[in-house]
Length: 392
Image (cartoon, rainbow, N blue to C red; front, side, top):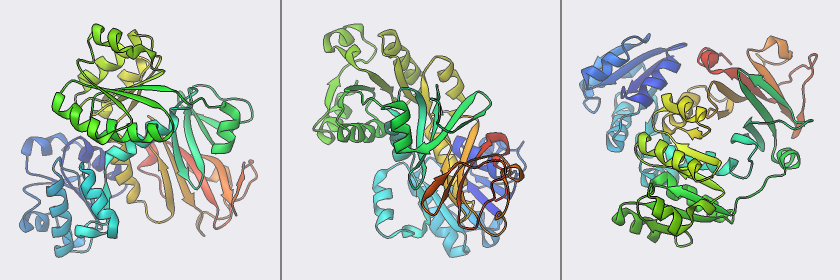
């Protein structure tokens, strides 16, 4: 398979690195220094402006199966996809930041010459909203048709789980998770920073019945957030000020989310929250390479870069791959529909660990002698390092 990745930033580089393990990848960027950053990968490179026909033709877009635009500019990504459709017939993927484009694209799908639009904002917000009621879990994502995957701090007896490295991965229905963990919805949630992720997360938490406070230093942005969130308390002030924390009683929050535009401020916000005694602290981390540092400080980190790149990579796996959980560092969990190639296989004959199987609407826990059947939906847990090489 031939894939063209436009944009050699962090997201594009991550996508190219994953796909180059199993496919022919061409990376295009107008910045020679950015191209130099991916030169160690097993990819071809083109220096040029991908909004110009000659640049995409140099990348041989006519033979491409996928054209993935990951630059920092939404308009550029959409134009690249539209141009790619004119010059060839690739499946086009555009990374966008503005939710307006997602809403427009969602009206008719494949609008603007884009087969798939990916935005980190809803992915990150939903990732945090899903797990906020479960103190025993770091991450919780819906995988497929009522099957959830979590990164567990502790695993109650009777709940299916496997260990990958230092991670305890649980796979279960929401009913099983609620029965095992007895979730507790936090009444008060504090969000530091008024980013788009913060606004969408606040909307989700308010619908869950949480009281939400948002602290934003910039008055204009705070007023904008306040106009969008009628049921949230928006405080204009320095989120690192001790007097603000004391006067506004911010330490009464049971959960804190640090969501600034710069990772340095995000880390500081999370550490301040923990200093004030808020143990359940989340952080929206721009640079996925920093997740480990946050986790070592006891902070649950979610990276827009990582969730976006993994959603894009997942889109290239074809129709058999039905769901993906990629927010758990070091681990990839797939929902895969069993075809003739996989039918009759046992767990030992699969790459990775076989989790619960969905067969005719029933969840089955496979044994060593279990045989897959065509039409089953399986959960497959693999290490991140081999995920890009996994053939379904």
